[in-house]
Image (cartoon, rainbow, N blue to C red; front, side, top):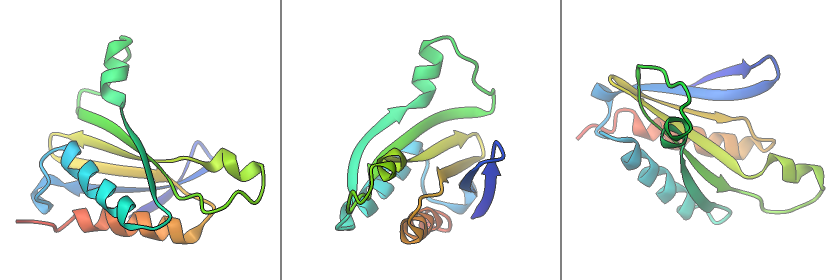
Amino acid sequence: MKKSILFDIHPMYSMEILKVNTSYKKVDEIIEHLKERISENPEGGFITVFDHYQHTQGIGGKILDSIVAVKNLLFCFGHSIGSIEIVAFRPKSIAIVETKASFILEFLETPRPEVNAWVQSWIKEIENNVS
């Protein structure tokens, strides 16, 4: 898992998983895996899936030729609302991008280190999940 800074201000995590290193064949299979992990967590709350590819295509937007599918899984781990400002960090999203050869999963860093660790571990489970 690689940590980087997007646009010089947004800490994010990213991992590319080659399709030969996983049994998952489509974005929707990965989404089901992540939804299961969210539901297993007592703080987790699944919200929805946003088909970013379909949306961008529908408005005539530009999509890289290498991209096959893009979906965002929206969820929340808000166990308290201790300040008004914290609400701006919620909900969270995991982006799942499918190319011909790989899946790229990305998410912005959260203020809670344990949430970052949970999401990283779920993403890492996808790699080497070869049947």
